[in-house]
Image (tube, rainbow, N blue to C red):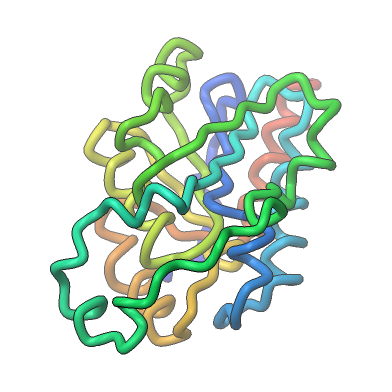
Amino acid sequence: MNTSANDLIFDLSKTAFLAIDLQKGIVENGTLLPYDNQTILKKNQQLAAALTNTAAMNILVNVDIETFRYLSKKNDVTQNSTSSSTPSAAIPKEFTDLLLAPALEEAANTLTITKHNPSAFFGTSLDLQLRRRGIDTLILSGVATSNGVYATALDAFQYGYHVIVAEDACSDREEEIHRLFVEKIFPRTTRVRSTKEILSAIKNTKDREQQ
């Protein structure tokens, strides 16, 4: 992973932070690796706070998991699962609670996007909302690294956005999978940086704008 922050020069008015699927029922359900749920939440809170009430956008992306049952089950993982034929239990109301929402409820630059697929772009108004605001740079985080974050990053690349993945603000159910994506797959289409590096670049941008 490139650990340089020198190429992170932000125009905050053209930047959006997308936190993917940070819902209570996802982040607090099962083990996250290599970063646990509290670490993920803390890193995402730091990123959101750094951009709150600036010219940038904070975009909270949640997923309507109930609609996933209509997607194709014809894949090896699902068909090899012993629970694939078991009816889904009722999804508790608090499952969809967005963990960053309380801290951002007073922020003027926050938008929520509900998705029904792994990517935050597919079947939503996200691209429209970004383009009408002149945004061309996206900072991505969330869970899971190999699912919602990757699908969104790939679509963003294909739409022509500059993408930065906050590596330690993402996590997965398997550490090996997370490492594979951040070390081998994401660098082909994005810049992978630490939360610390991104926060430093945001601070430098703010300092430069105040001069």
